[in-house]
Image (cartoon, rainbow, N blue to C red; front, side, top):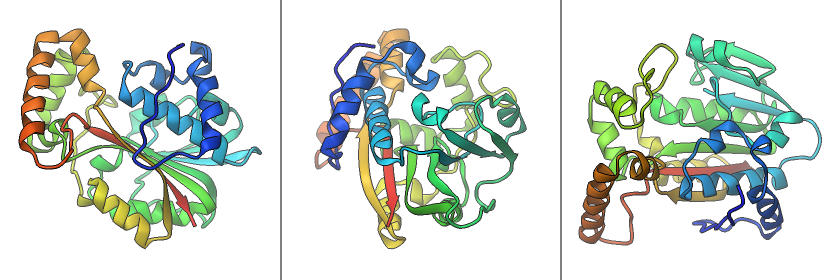
Length: 275
């Protein structure tokens, strides 16, 4: 990967992160996590690179303790952070736990109720998980409790108010499986341990509600970015006719919706710091 990373932040990242990002933008494939390599070029990958730079800058340089809530078989963390961390994964899916090959400790359990001793972790990551939880508030409470003072929480989630978010929220699960198999080309979709998983879209998945929760519970927003769902660049490659139709629909919707919202912004990244 040798493209220049362009960062357009809703919340500005600290200036000392930019050097880390330049280094990461020129990193070889062997230095980047598979989850990042699998992302199509676009806003999602750029934002994840920005997150990696911030984590590299803000996390302590010593040995780290990391909790991946619902981490399963894939990590979205930078490899240099993983190499110096003790990673604990909690996931409710037996197959996901069995497929995990990077955590030092893998626990079969429910992140909404599983508790660790207060102040156990430097970083809690919850990536593409909260949309699947019936009780997000309970999960967030457990995450906050387990964080050290000054620790970071990284959340990646779909935007319920986007075009893809609305479709996902109001369409049946069988349609999600069909989309993964026939549009994304993932033939094992829906099999045990394979996405897509059923979604609930608790109100706290909505970004404004999540920000309000953070402010009320001693969490400072360090980074926030809404970005085009990676499904759009995927479809432009795999299904260009369908992608053109959706792009046209999104353009019309953006024109009709008041304000400067872009309905293509189907996902977001948030980094929260425990005060």
